Structures are given as structure tokens and as C-alpha cells.
Length: 112
Image (cartoon, rainbow, N blue to C red; front, top):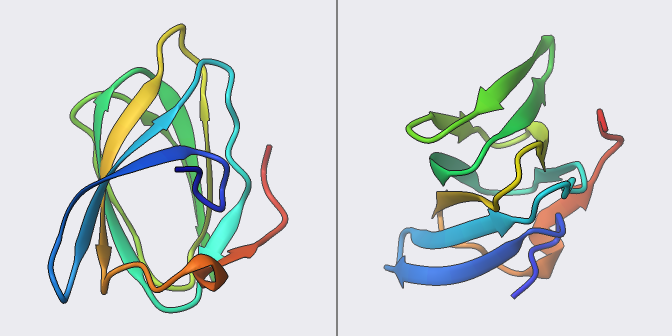
């Protein structure tokens, strides 16, 4: 399944209060910049390498996405990521509450 940001996602598990997916972005891939209407996300990077941009009100950062990195995407954060490696960039995402549908992601001006 393709996420609204253009990455590939696969459902791993879910409950009434959360959903976990595996996310993958191919080498050279750049996601669309989005923000969410109602969910928080927790990310954990498994393999590959890339960069993540997050912007929330006055806070803005770009960080290296490498295996073992964990980060959060609080409600209202605009974010974008890209794969700068030669293998897929893979990570686990937990969405709280569960992803409500395609209208959840709002396209935003991006960094890349």
C-alpha cells in the first residue's frame, strides 16, 4: 500500500487505540511533506540511511535516519524524509490513535 506521503507501508498489527506499520522508501526516494490532522506517530528505523525533516511552530530540525534511531511526530508537525543510501530506508511507525483514513495527511510545503 502507498501512504499519502508516497512511501510504501505494510500493516503489522493494530488495536482499537494504535496501529503499527512497516514503512519503506527506495534508494533516492523523497517523501511528500505532510502534517496530520489527528494522530501522533512514533518511528523506529530498522535499516538503510536517510534524513528526516520535522517542523513544529518555531522548532525545526533535520536529522540523520540510521538504524536504531527513534523519533516522534507529534500532532501538527510537518515532516518529510528521504533515502540517501543504496538500500531501502525501512522503519516501523506506530500511529496513535489508529490511522483514520486518507484525509488524515495534509500536503505541506516541503524542505526537499
